[in-house]
Length: 259
Ligand SMILES: NC(=O)c1ccc[n+]([C@@H]2O[C@H](COP(=O)([O-])OP(=O)(O)OC[C@H]3O[C@@H](n4cnc5c(N)ncnc54)[C@H](OP(=O)(O)O)[C@@H]3O)[C@@H](O)[C@H]2O)c1
Image 1 (cartoon, rainbow, N blue to C red):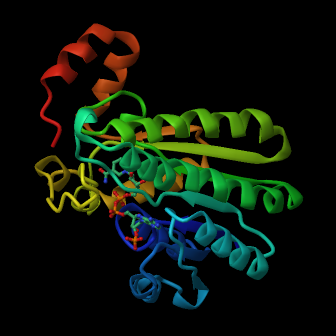
Image 2: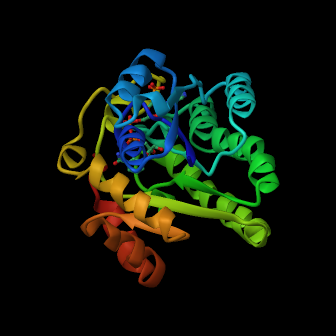
């Protein structure tokens, strides 16, 4: 039986991925901070007996190491690692203390780097594996009130493309996922300038693509070993403008309402 380890599995995209992979007959390792919620998600999976809950705090490097120790002691193979758990941001550059930038970089970027480095030796020993990193379309371009979040998501691209470049010939695949607006709790938990949660379901979020649709697209992309996918509607246009007509991107981003 194949095994997938998903962080951020207590909610949104990670939760939907847990249901999808369980339905497909995989053993699912579910990680996030809230162990009680993870246990509920596991109980709703198609094969609850093939689910393992491993709590983790991605803001805490020791917690990440403890979770990795537990997973590596229990499993002799991990086929897919999904670095999905994360937090967004709703604060302007000039009002955001650097501690908030560091916290977002830790949760959204460094935690995935640490987990990747812990899991890679096992994957390499077993002849390969697949690492999925959930970026964002703001991992492609900058966006108001998302400075640290956008920076963390940009960093993901540099890191996982390099993982692929160095290790694909030893069986390691990577998929970077760039969602646009997905209907999850992400805006509710986004950090504001003082580190409190934004607490608002943003309008654009409410009208986003469902987490289930997003999970299906990720499942398909991993199966086909796609290196990068966009799960978007019209918001994908900003990526094209940013790449091919930068002046349009600058014009639009200067006028855009962030939420
Ligand atoms: N929704 C969108 O529109 C969208 C767009 C682009 C990218 N994304 C990305 O998609 C990923 C999943 O987000 P989502 O939209 O599904 O949001 P969500 O519903 O808020 O889920 C976020 C998940 O991350 C976990 N998490 C947050 N902080 C954590 C920490 N310190 N330690 C461990 N787990 C933590 C949460 O679990 P606990 O609270 O239980 O710890 C939760 O399971 C994120 O990386 C996000 O940046 C989302």
